[in-house]
Structures are given as structure tokens and as C-alpha cells.
Length: 266
Image (cartoon, rainbow, N blue to C red; front, side, top):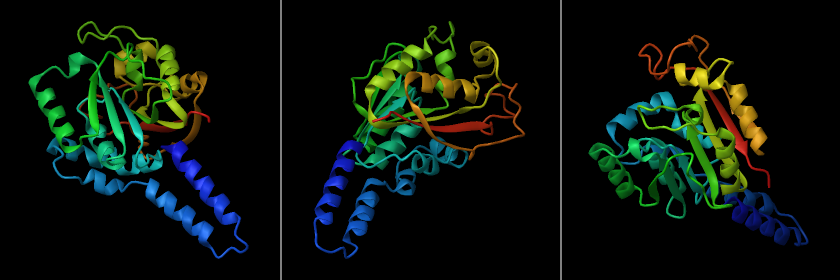
């Protein structure tokens, strides 16, 4: 979508520049095109039918602010990685509109229950552009240059996690990011929000706390070829104890989280 938008915008600018005078139409056309590309995020969050449990998370997750910061656009082809119960999949499906799409990837063992199946059926009914693909993260290989936007919400650390109990095999984060880089279109955005963890042995930190050091995440993405374009401290919480597991009731939903916007050059 970004390539189409930029091409159209450039063509408009050239056509207007060929005129013998400038009456402000160039700026007006540019502003109008930009407005058309930006979804109404508040309306997407307020879309009818979202489950009550998801709506209750809005205050702590601020999805409208996150998606605006990350520059999700109308018509984008979106990849929601380890989408869980589809919280972001549904909101992004509403935001990108009928011209866009959302592919949600989930390890099958996490979406095999009747409750999970019913929830995803409801999401797909409300947002027909959303589809869920059961796949182990390490096995998922997107087609080259397929996506404009990818969301990794509170899950990047899971690439370092392994669990016999939950049937999560050891993964190679570098290999995953290499495939993700290939699957993103030139100029595409990868949105990363995760719990701030301490430095140290990353797998040990993740095993204990389900957190990850921002420095590690940044280095991983940059090594894969992505460029860190922007960061936000909207979820900064200096009172959070990084030694606590994120599921500890005393910190759950209130963790110190980093927000990073990566872009594939192009």
C-alpha cells in the first residue's frame, strides 16, 4: 500500500508542478492524500462487537495511540505475529478497511480450544479481512514482499522462550527475523511493544520473567536489516520491578514496556 500511495503522491506532485502557477493545490492534494491513508483509529477501537475482555484492555494498551504512532495505513496488508486472542487483529482489521487485510499467526496449541475457535470465528465475522493461520512461529515463512505492516505486541521475547509444557520448541530469533525481513515490502513497518527486562542471558531472563532487554531487541532487528525509526515512552513505568514475572498480579498490565517502530529500507 505504501508503494502505491507514494507513487500516486509523486505523480500528483509532478502534474501540479507542471502548471504555470502555484495556487496552493499541491499542498492541498498532499494533505488530502495523507488524510485518506490514515485510518480513524478511535473508530476502529470503538467498532461494535468487540468482546468485553478485550475492551477492558484498551486503557492499558492504548491501541489507537500505538497504531497512529506506528503509521498503520488504510489498505495495508498486515501480519499479526503470535496474535493470541486477536486483540490487535480485530482493531487493525477495522482500521485498514475493506481494501486491507490482516493475517494473524498463532501456534496451533494456543488456539485449539472451543473458546478460542469461537472467539476467532467472531472476529472473522465482524472483520472479514482478518484470517487466522495456525503455525509454529519457527515454521512460519511469509512470501517475499507481502506485507506493509507487522505487529509484535508483547511477544518478541517469546522467540527466546521454550517450553515442554506448552509445546514451544527452541527457536532461532535471527532466522525468524531474516524471514520476516524478506516477507515485508520495502518501506514496511514492524511495530514492537514488549516488557522491559534486565540485561543478561536473554533466554534465562525470558524464562524467569517473560521480559526482554530493549537493547537486545534493537540489536536483533538492526542485525536483520531493519532500521529503528522511532521510539516512544508511552508505557514507561519506573516503579516496575523487572525481576518479577509479567504474570505476577502485582505488575500484570502495569509493566514497564518499550515501544519501537522499525522500518525495512526501500
